[in-house]
Image (cartoon, rainbow, N blue to C red; front, side):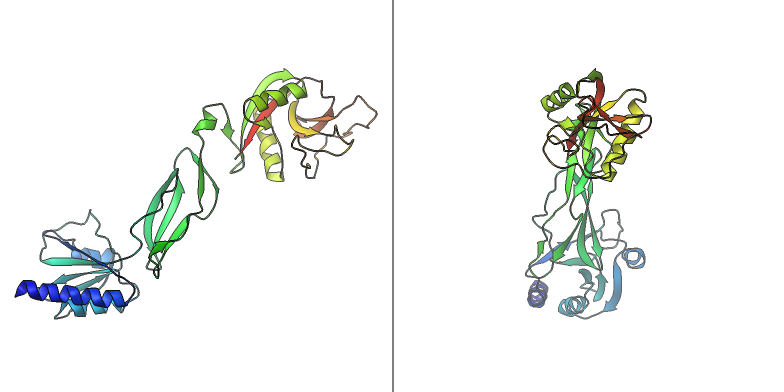
Length: 300
């Protein structure tokens, strides 16, 4: 008789829950349930009421937008509503006799995102996953918060991109420009084309200050490495005098932080390559055959 009653009440609960967009009930029986009063006071509790049936307790939970699970005591008819579908494993007690019923949400096929950790919370009482880049990885782009569509019970598409830096740091590159690039200073004095070829052979290119932020980062990085030797960047006006381009033929955006008196006139010394003068953190127009240090860059 008792088993039939339990079966009937569980079946009715499933019907009610299904009508409110949740096709499955997950039921776990506990001999050692949570410290229920502590849970109510400090964790996930919403309310405690006395209701003479499981279906009544389930209907009450489903009538509240922030109720995701409940405990029901079949002996004393105690209904305890909670705003989390989970049981915290750290919450233990000797209390027994309760059954824990959890509404379905997006708990399957949790998207795995490389080089991230995931924390699940209930923002505004809805399941939410927050991604964070692991140690040694860098945030590149994308949304780091993922929510559950309670209509389709599917997680929204993850867009976060965390890049593992270990393959770059193993090759001597450092992350110094936020999300945009890694740099490697090379303290060998070489002509511009030798530095360019060396970087290309390493799977990179001479440093390209594409934005003001990148330039500010680059100049500080170079100054931390040297103060008295020029450092090549990937900037020339070889093709058209006065028109600065990177070696991928994209334009170098202004402003151009020239040293006083620079750039040289077109008729002087074929000064077609641009280097950093570290102590002043400004640009110098130089013949490409001059010797200077250089910085290789990998854009992430």
